[in-house]
Amino acid sequence: MYAKEWNLRRYVKRWTVLLGIAALAGLVGGLGALVFRLLIDGFTSLFFSRVLPAVSYRVYGLNLGYVLLPVFGALLIAPMVKIYPGLRGNGVPEVIEGIIFKSGKIGAKLALLKTVATAVSIGAGGPLGREGPAAFIGAALDSTLAEKLPNPQVRKLITTCGLAAGIAGTFNTPLAGSMFALEVVYMGAITINLVPIFISAIIGNAITLTILHQPARFPVVNPNISILGGIPFYFILGVILGLVGYAYTRALYKATDFFDAFSKRYPFELRLVIGALGIGLIGMLLPTQGIFGIGFGGIKDALLGKFTLELLIILALAKMTATLLAISSGFSGGIFAPSLFIGTMLGSAFGMLVPHANVEAYALAGMAGFFSASTQAPLTQIIMITEMSGSYAYSPAVALTSVVAFLTARAFFRGSSVYTTKLERKGVHVKTGRPLILETIAVHEIMTTNVVRIHVKRPLLEVERIISSTGHDFLPVVDDDGRVVGIVGVTEILGRTTSMKKLSVERTMKRDFAVITPAETAQDALDKILMNDQNLLPVVDDSGKLIGVVTKKDIYRAYYYAIEGIYLW
Image 1 (spheres, rainbow, N blue to C red):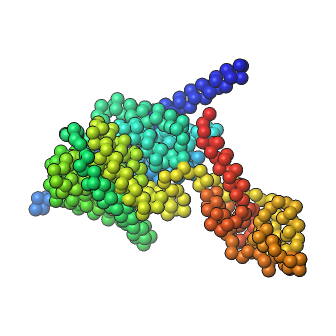
Image 2: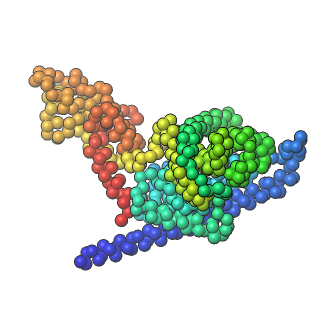
Image 3: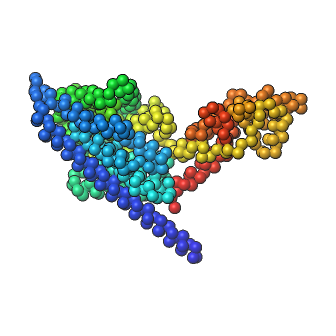
């Protein structure tokens, strides 16, 4: 009886502490999102209300001053993003890497720089969003808060709480912020771990809503509809958006490769200026339709039916091009808001082609579909559209288009996304849609260094004796320098005559075998073992010398302990 009472007391104490830290993480993430939003508003006012009138010069009805605003912004952020390349783009891949592979460590210094760099980028007209940077800022601030915590799983969780609070505080969508953390970042989370994430997201949302009094909402004019007759069209829209979303992601990284190669020959600042000039020229032609900045005004106008079919297509292509230039050239900002804009325009245009269609429904479905395709996060978008529209009426249309777009793009992504592709190009293997357990464990953490090895000149008879005495069914074979030249096991011994067993191992050893390095992951080891039908995998250094082995048993044990570590109290 006493033991049960003591355990209950410990349970209550631990969860009280965890939820208290989660609440603090939500407060910090929410305040970070609040400061971030205010800075964006401040820089937007500075550039468009003060700088633009001073540089305006009209030619044939076009204001050439619009071209200069992104250039000014590029020159301001160039010193920061040149020194800290992690500031470029949306910041979500860096958060994924920090949470999964660095025990939640990101750093408050980068949060400060990311806040300024993104606020300047968007304020100067960069066609980017604030969700990725807000997630980065919240996660980075709370990673500093969690640094002293002893449990690495709790550190990861608190960093994720900051991300959820940042998203929720930016869009005023606590459920979608939590789901974003689950789907995109905190892969492998279990239900009970989501409790502190929800707490942080709710508090982060409350912070910005209390101060700003303006939730991010999209106007819904005609929510009382039936989508039954439109199911085939929503399905087709999902397929189209899935293909476009995948192609757009590929183009984004192709453009990034181009600018990376360009900056090796020319000053880094020049790549930013070139991207800024392209953004400015596009924005000059469409200055009031949402190309500049976050673009929510353009989304609202599309939902209200203010754009023609031709203009919707032009705006989608213009925003795609401008965002591609901004991200690939090195501006700091997210892809979430541009994805909403592009999807809204494409969905609206598609809806105009459908007989007797409610264009508003196709606009919201397109908004969800394009984002779901590129990020491979359909649940986040289904929930977010519901929260931001304030209506469940369109949920079936949004869900159908979102899921179809997700599945269509997944057929080509093969487990990647617009976020994870950046990590994969760095050699960090992350796949969406599956819990990351073995990918977070390095081979050097689980390998056995006290290895039974066989010299290449030893007779097979001696190998048989060693196998029977040790119980190992595979042994690595090495040469005089300690380099692995083969593996030998029970299959190489069975059926051999006594005279054959007197011959050296090199006559019968398996020469077609796989090895692994200490820096690779347990998932890499398991894949190699299964693909090559080996129970044992030699671990080698850069010169090919044997330094350890990994077996299936080592991997299964590591998986078990990692799973145990996920469960918090």
